Length: 263
Image (cartoon, rainbow, N blue to C red; front, side, top):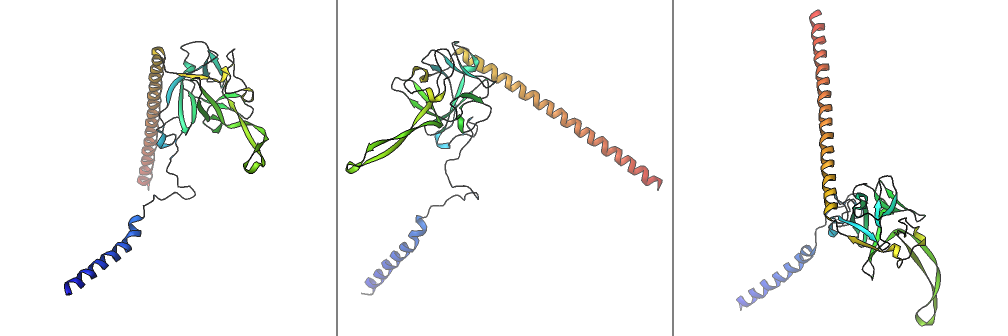
């Protein structure tokens, strides 16, 4: 009888311990957030892929050439100009396409170092820095081409009557997207004049050919050479500054010792 009572007491004690520990075990630790910032597990990086875009998207840029259905390759020039080229191996048509959000990309000219952008007037231009006008919605068209629409600029259409639940009518407004578009003369079209079904708005991402890869390799070698030369110049300038500071300190020590001997 005593043993049975002892077993019942121990079982009740185990249940009470489990109930007291359950809230503590169910808590998942959270990383502290910086003051004034929202706790978001998606750390954003820059669009160039160097610590850029959301971590869960990967962020490695795709090197492609955007071939328009009008037979032009999209080009991004160093002077800020956007146009199309009929050449197969033009360096300014080699692009880096990087995801900055789900279904949103940034398009950068590899040789120009500028980003494709569309302003509030629907004009395409090449921006030196990445901003919200450089974000484009990438969609796959039914014909196998891609379309690229401005994420932040569109035409707001007047609301239209839509039949709602219970037979009541409600007013629904919609936006018409502005698309990246190259016409039959290789010139960019204004965003508000474009449609997703236009040939000028359809682009086929092409992988780079052997000549394109060779141009990229030479560009990287040139950049490494320039970086090395810059570091050499900086190192020499730092050495000159150190020698100059050392000579000034020596002169100051000599003058101080002369003054002390005179005293």
